[in-house]
Length: 231
Image (cartoon, rainbow, N blue to C red; front, side):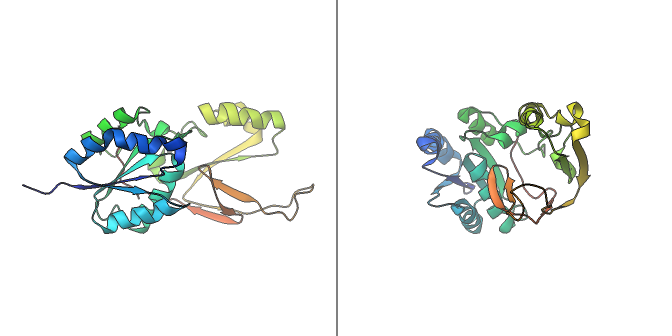
């Protein structure tokens, strides 16, 4: 009898009042019948990155993220650092966070059991995000950043961007005079001097809900760096 493939589930037991751990408990028996399973629980910020590295080092072929965008981001960092794709490791997501922008955009079912059934089907057809909400026609699999720069928006315009732009990806269409779009493989962002009390202050950089540093910053696309189960 051939050995079962190894699955490591990574979750934050404290997030969502224990929601991630509750979901894992619901699917643990099913997982154990198909995989040799390991549950790895985070104990501190950025711990999920090291847990992903350890899981790959220990021979896991499937890493299941049970949580939100923050946990997923940390796991992806570990996956890339450990050359997960080159080692044939696949990622899967069961969303339990509050926002879940990535899972939602990827079409991963919101219901945890439906998401787990998707994992069991091992749907690895290379279909990644077809659309990002900030720009309607963004395609994540094209290896390019789709960028939009806002030029001195008023408070009401910024509110419209946050509402309509993020939900429907149509801010540039509604306010082309206040925004500029572009495409690039590499993006460099630098602080600029503006009037007011903000001169000389650090400009924080947020990436997918996480503060990752301050300007200046450089971003580079890594095309096809992650193998991910999606519908």
